[in-house]
Amino acid sequence: MKKITIGEAARQSGVKVPTIRYYESIGLLAEPDRSEGNQRSYEQSHLHRLAFIRHARELGFEVDAIRTLLALQDDPNQSCASADAIAKARLIEVEQKIRSLTALKAELETMVEGCGHGRIDQCRVIEVLADHGQCMHPRH
Amino acid sequence: MKKITIGEAARQSGVKVPTIRYYESIGLLAEPDRSEGNQRSYEQSHLHRLAFIRHARELGFEVDAIRTLLALQDDPNQSCASADAIAKARLIEVEQKIRSLTALKAELETMVEGCGHGRIDQCRVIEVLADHGQCMHPRH
DNA sequence: TCTTGCACCTCTAGCCGCTAGAGGATGTAG
DNA sequence: CTACATCCTCTAGCGGCTAGAGGTGCAAGA
Figure 1: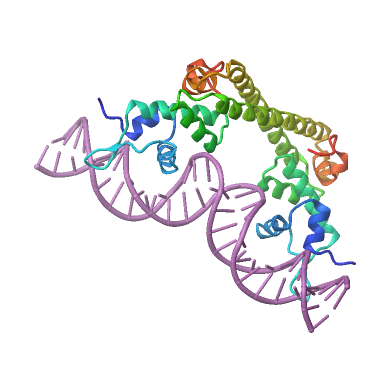
Figure 2: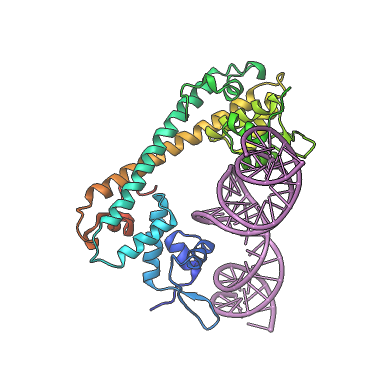
């Protein structure tokens, strides 16, 4: 059992050192043992945990959702309905966000294309911002 | 000149009362006159400003960008190159975000579809989260 | 006129998920 | 033994608000 320092854990997991400490402080990552000199000493299990957390964060799950997912992972007999629900909810969020951003994209494109690179008082960018009535989509 | 209270300004602009005060505090919205009893009294120009800010926020511009855009609007002789650049930068951001979310969407769909609604230890959601190697996209 | 009750005021603190920095202790290589 | 990286704790800050406490202003109804 070689001891894994927090820096090493950061390197291997891709999670920054202060972030690892932060995850510990909010109870997302279990407190590791400490060395004689009070330095954190991680086990392999912590690294798995960190990888899980990182991946979930990359997928945009909130910390609370991750907390639930981790708890589910620890209880393999449970139904995966909860995990499924969390993932589905996130999927719906993402789909909604994509729709919304796609509308914004269209709006921004119109603005940018309309810009004749002249003076501000003819600038379509400023004009559209000032007058929502010129928008393609009444509500963003 | 009827006086416009902050509540009325909120109603007309769709920006919440505390948010209006917040915009004033960070110097995005000019301080209005005050009534005898120290209550804010807005002009029409403030409402235009608020509409502009709201629209820009809806399009995802950061407060600093909006500050610049407002300054540009006040100086109509200037070239609109800056406004154009800000809008273009935002467009690129949005496009990047859409690409990224589309990848996440695919990932989440795989997870959710793979879930057999059985027990956690066969749950694809948990499994994929725990093992990034199962991802379709090596980097999110 | 008085009172009810909403809208307004300022101020401070909290949200999320970190990130930065101060000021000090530990650990390791030369 | 010294230099230097890494570690420790603690507090404060980021953006863009939002919530709440504790108090004042104001208009309309009895």
